[in-house]
Image 1 (cartoon, rainbow, N blue to C red):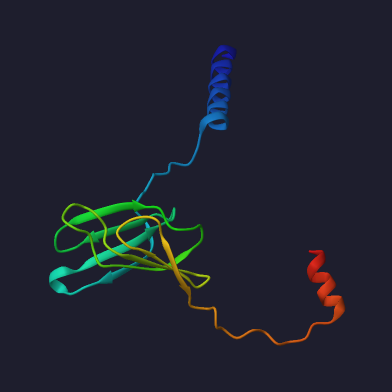
Image 2: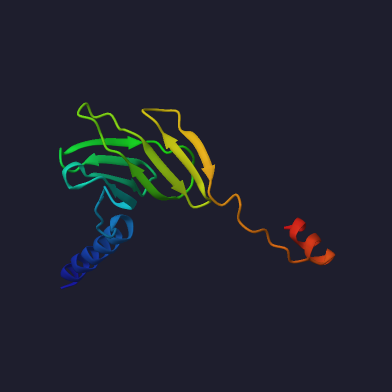
Length: 142
């Protein structure tokens, strides 16, 4: 009887150790999740563009099934809009325009480097509220 009890205890201990050392929640590696995207063209020549979770840009012609990517973005940051005029039959991307959340607009014209076009927020209103000296000093001490 003691021998059976010992085997049960050893089995429970082995199970507890296995769970403690190696058990993890099962998870998959899903790819191709787009964060933002855009469509351009007409029904006969529709092109799609998108930005994945890692910031790479992907392009495709829906009518021809031709895709291109990943294309590295011009700078780090969050892209809020992307637009393209499609992909050629050779798989070369056409013009790509990206808009960042800070207002910067970049153009890819038939290959690198990216060209900075403008910042659409450059003429936005400037805050005219006056700050006290205490507030100014506190801002600089951060």
